[in-house]
Length: 154
Image (cartoon, rainbow, N blue to C red; front, side):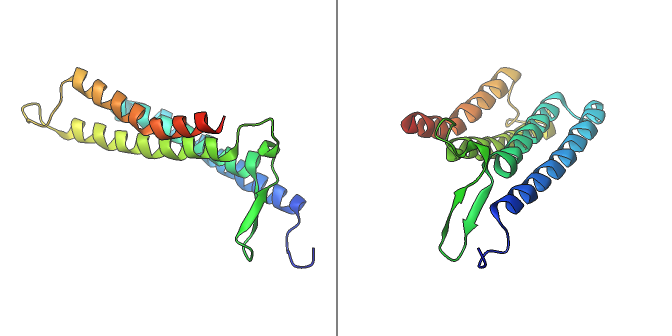
C-alpha cells in the first residue's frame, strides 16, 4: 500500500466528487439549453438535449458506478465501483453504447445543421421524409456494433 498514493476508498471518494461536480455542470447545461430552446431549430435542440443526457449518463457510469482503479506501471487495473459484480451488465457494454451514441448523435447534429443551412432550392436539401429516414439509418447503423457486442457477451 506504500506504492500507491491513493487507497481504494480515497479513489472512490475522488471519483464520486468528480462525478457529482460534472453532473451539476451537466444539469446547468441542460437548464441553459432549455432556456435557449426558442433560439434553436427543433431537430438541433433535440439532438443537443440527447447529447447532454447521454454524456451525463456516461460520466455517472464511469465516475460513480464503475470507478476504475488503474495500475499504470503494470498496464492494467480493476473496477472498484458498484457495477463490478457479476450480477450487473459489464462495464464495456454500457461504455461502448454511450460512446457510440455520443459520436452518432454528434454526426446527426452535423447532418441536421447542414440541412438547416441549405437553401430550399439546393439539390442537397432533403425533404422531411428523407431527412427522417437518414436520421433513423444513422442511429440504427451506429448502434449495430454495440448491440451485437452486448448480445455476444450475454
